[in-house]
Image (tube, rainbow, N blue to C red; front, side, top):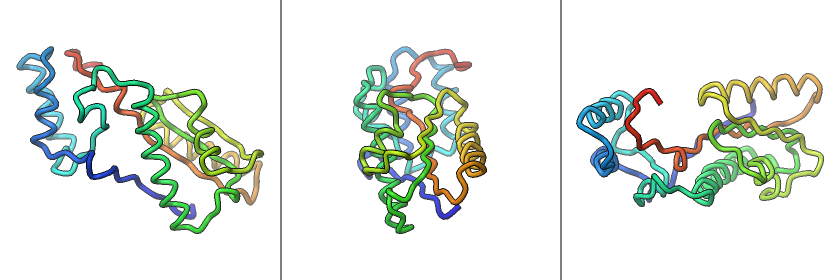
Length: 179
């Protein structure tokens, strides 16, 4: 591994715990037990004073997210992160031989790898793989393992693994805590 880069969302997407609680409280379909459950979940999951949230949720549109909301969130996270990674490493996009995108809850057409390839004008012979519909934590493990296996065939290659999650359009506002 040459390097890695984590995404930090823009400041306009930062929430404190009070703002997070207001988002939960504006859901009229929840009862006292659901509010208690969500409060407990927020505390135990580490929601703090610098928690980031999708724009559509901040704007109160969590129940009506659009495809454009999801694509905008993905583009922000992926492109900002790759811009930083490529600048930090000095690797040119044309030097990348393999790209793997791993997002369990979002699989658009054109694919996320196609969006990256077109944005960075990568080579036409790049090997591109899109992984989706896996558990959140499993997807990055599978993506890295896929690259490891590909390196056996494509020796002396370079790869980028992009792993993120699409929260905005997958926000759950229901009452079933098992979902």
